Length: 102
Length: 102
Image (tube, rainbow over all chains, first blue to last red; front, side, top):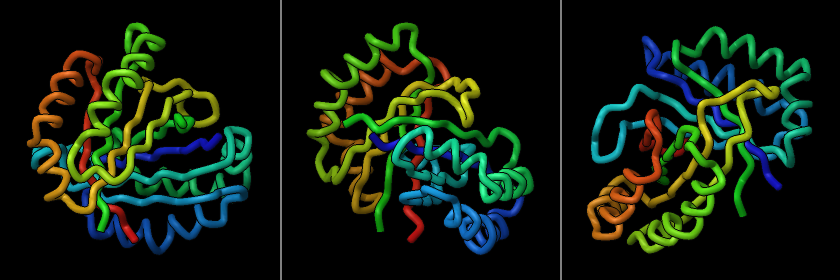
């Protein structure tokens, strides 16, 4: 079983500053999360066929199971990332927890 | 470069019927898309730490680049999936196109 925390960020005021902050500050915090297995980061270019999208950035953070994810969220590194999320996530940004379907 | 089409479905009226339809009808259509490299399906259990989520299902469909994705969307199999999406996607479901950050 693999569980992922998907973090979807809406368009920030300054996309270039967001990307720089994510890569230089936020990602290094998440990389220190206990139990994290894989991080997949993606920059949104729009909706399908060039339509607009309110979103800018998607982070998929993979764990063995929901207990491992919750342990990471409850760790000091999890709190550090949550605080930084509050600094960088524009209104409408959201997170989901999901289990991969084999 | 890898591009993914992320399809996020909101809670359907009947989640069990949705899952069965997705696996037995929708996924087999998407598997026939030209140029598709990988499909990752995930069932949403909620938001972080057991909070509620308006979402139910996330499909990540991976392509070599945006041209390959657009070719798939414009193919007969793409039209077939779009029609079926209209049947199964509850209000608030959405798609994004994003490029993986290496």
